[in-house]
Length: 145
Image (cartoon, rainbow, N blue to C red):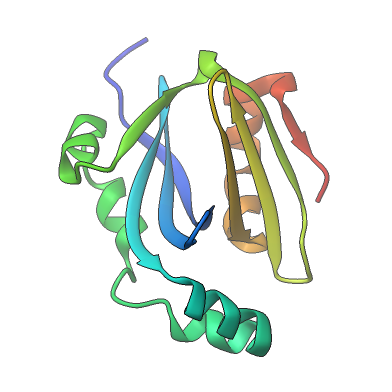
């Protein structure tokens, strides 16, 4: 394989024990990179549950264009951009299940040999990389949307 580069990715919210964190899942030829963003607390989560999509839009913060910025970087630069960013080799991915959460949102469950990540992403964002995910993960991708 030639030089590694960013092939695509999508923005999502990762569910954490005490809130959520905005992340970008970056896809390269060799690995996924989880690039972290702004943390949101349980208050925002409660507000989001109460007001639905309105609260979700209000918490977007200053991360607009983040996926475009990361797309212009080399994968190693992305890893070093933030101490919390980390990589997941495709060989470590057991399954990635994508299923509808509501009309606008998909739940993405990413299970590795050591961890399970629960993400929420827009239908448009995930459908934009569906074929790329299928080519990188093969039968380990379960797309139910």
